[in-house]
Image 1: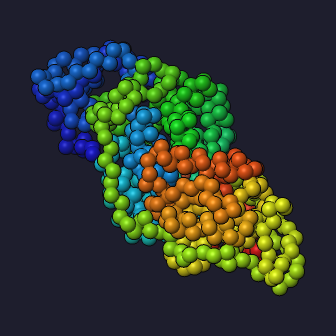
Image 2: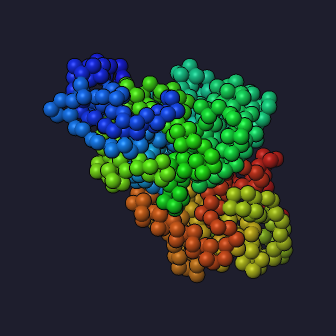
Image 3: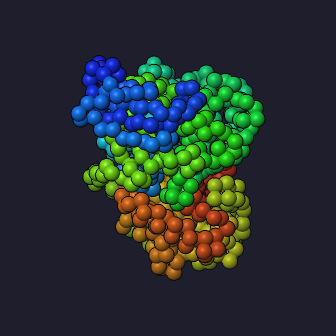
Length: 587
Ligand SMILES: [Fe+2]
């Protein structure tokens, strides 16, 4: 949807000189200049096609009979915001997410569609790329840089080197996404090193993920061409990375919220702000509705002491500087694409008007440009390759009367430790025990059709339900089923097959709540509002039944995530992450 600057210079130059007339002029702008850190009153901005041709005190020479003039009446005018790292292959389709992001003033999204690749490989990536095109928002993609998380255990699909090479030829594919198993870099794993050098040869960016790395390991990582990180959770980690020439995306999203910890220390230290950005790393529908998106980061940062103009620069210019796109985007200046926001004041940061490429998308907080729905091919809506379950599918057999189980003990929704519990066997079968808060947990390969699965035990979940199942899990996307009885586990799994993906909660044979995720088993094809309501019901039905954690949807999401300690379950088995070995469920 954007022109190239190279093809536009003659037209832009002519409008700036008044030899050609503008399509649109905004007058009486209180312009937030991210280039000079000032607010410039009474500014006029002339636009032709999708780019800005003139910024200055008087654009009257560019007015023609067809020029539209909008009097902004001294409102504040800023460049569109960007989210430099998020996973938009979550919850809703890009078209639905785009609507919410645009209402928050976000006109550019830098997406790392890691889970759609984990399910659909290169074909999934291409499909998601297509879904992100021709929308009234800019969606840039990176090739996922962390798959498989650990080839010894992982089941996920990934992209080959030649598929990566071909993907980055697309103008909206910018490079490699978060390379989150940083040991693959410090151990110089051959495919990872080849991917990194290919990206560098092609002038592509490489996004990082350096949680836990410091000193020589961090140096090795940075010297391999990885120049950004969104993982710092405190200022010391920010500073160490900035000193090594990295760019930092401060995360404020559904996984973590780090602004409160980082911004005050950035200000008291007097650190340069030019390599700092805000990112969400993914937002669930309730957080998006409740807090907002990058607009929320601006509001919060200002509350923490940041100057509004600096917050705007971190939300706009710095992102495009990092992605080597500063000639096209990031500020309101001649030659730039006309992604422009208009605000009543410098408090709410909810734009009254949003222009993308000079086109008015939102006016008075409402969409004036409809977003078309795209058809979705059937193959990506049929990724749950599983046969009908019965309660026998979840049996754990033993010849002993009493067994010891290695359990996945939940400390939070995300953090686990290896536990141990004595269980009685009855008629050769070992069951879960709701009274002792010991649950069965199972992981099934649902992508490759292999019937590969593992079943073990989980402790400290607490909800009085029969079963909770999900097909969305970082970044294996096995079907995870947690249950207090085998019969409800089978009902939950069969409901998931019927919906071809999603989350479901079952009690005594009845469906308490269901969130269908029909697209690759990870994204819903329903509206944002419907998904938001279903998502809320899933968590409420578990929390209201006594679950010990406030956001139980995260449990199946993180149970197979091998990048975190200490014990994880995948369809290939139960894994002691630190020792990098399988453990038996019972002995
Ligand atoms: Fe991420």
